[in-house]
Length: 102
Image 1 (cartoon, rainbow, N blue to C red):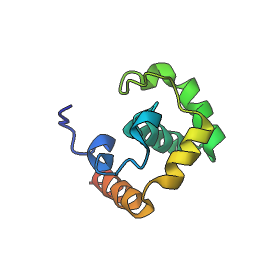
Image 2 (cartoon, rainbow, N blue to C red):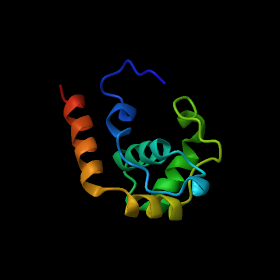
Image 3 (cartoon, rainbow, N blue to C red):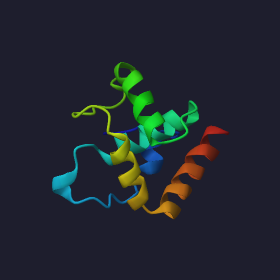
Image 4 (cartoon, rainbow, N blue to C red):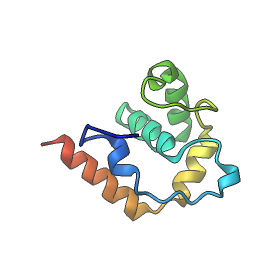
C-alpha cells in the first residue's frame, strides 16, 4: 500500500515489530493499533471499551481497514499491547501526534 498522507497512522506505526507468532495472527497489527488509537481518542478507557467502540464503528472502519475476522476481542487488544515494544509505540505515537499539530 502506498500512502500519500504524511500524517497517516500507518506511516508512523508500520515500523513497530509484531511480536506474535505468524500462525496466531487473526488480525493485522496495524488494524489493532489503528482501532485502539481511534477508540482511545474517542474516549475508550480500557480494552473492553476499545472492542465495543470497534464493533460500533465497524462499517466506518471498513472504509480504511480490511479486518478479515472483524474486530479483535478485548483479550486480543490486551495481549498484543502487552507484548509490543512500549518505547517504539510511544515514539510512533508522538511522531504521529506531532505531525498532526503542524
